[in-house]
Structure formats: structure tokens, C-alpha cells
Image (tube, rainbow, N blue to C red; front, side, top):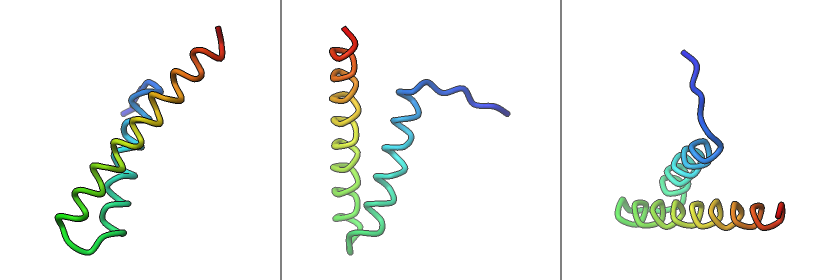
Length: 60
């Protein structure tokens, strides 16, 4: 089965999996892990949208 993902979907999956791993390995309690994972996911999304807009305006 072949998956065809757009660049945006692949970026979201990368952000999700990376945030889960960072949250699990870097904090001690489950509450801290959840908060850190969600915060990392937000930072990844911010970076994806920020870089996307930067590339958009760079190609104009």
C-alpha cells in the first residue's frame, strides 16, 4: 500500500512523531511529558507555517 502525502501532511506527521518522542524522553512525569509534547508540537507547527510563508514571499 502506497501513501501519497502532501508536503504539509508529511510535515505534520513529522511534527507529531517528533513531539511524542521528545516528550517521552525528556521529562519525568506524565503531566510534564504531555505539556512538553504539546508545546513542541506547537513550535513545530509555528516553524512549518513560518517557513512556508517565508518561501512563499521569497518566490514572488
